[in-house]
Length: 207
Image 1: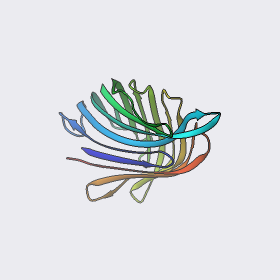
Image 2: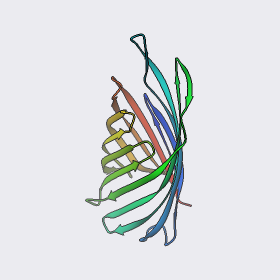
Image 3: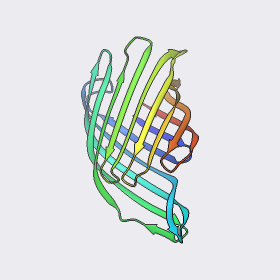
Image 4: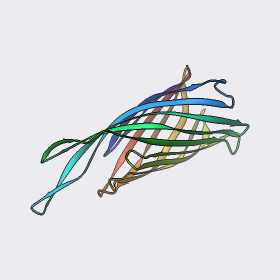
């Protein structure tokens, strides 16, 4: 399976990757999950003579994880772990700073469950040591014309002290041919203050 996603708001991030299974797409078995992404956000910068400034943080991430998938009548559970790396650049009024490359471990877990024949519950958690980051998302949906519609909530935090909480609505698993999509729209608040709307789009396709 190949996949990609775009998160657009006050901060933006784009991701692409692939998942390779060895025992069939819908069977218990081992899998490899490889992904890479890049993004930008505006955050609090250095204070100059008591005057607060802002800076832009550019980030690139990559990871190759190995794990296992368990399929049940009600859904699927997956757990992955493996190395990750990150590169960051800070742009402020003082200039551009390229931070040292960092490497660490990433843990990734997700559940896609169908409590009823017409509903879908998804939960995802990703922990990374390179940036001391954590991202989690919880969503529920009801089947309407072939797509699951419902509420979602997502939280992101990292070692810089930055955090982001988003609450919105989503449409998951609507399809065009053999390509599946997820679209979300909502409102997010950030630790730097204020709030803004956000839009996300995800896409995946079997090999």
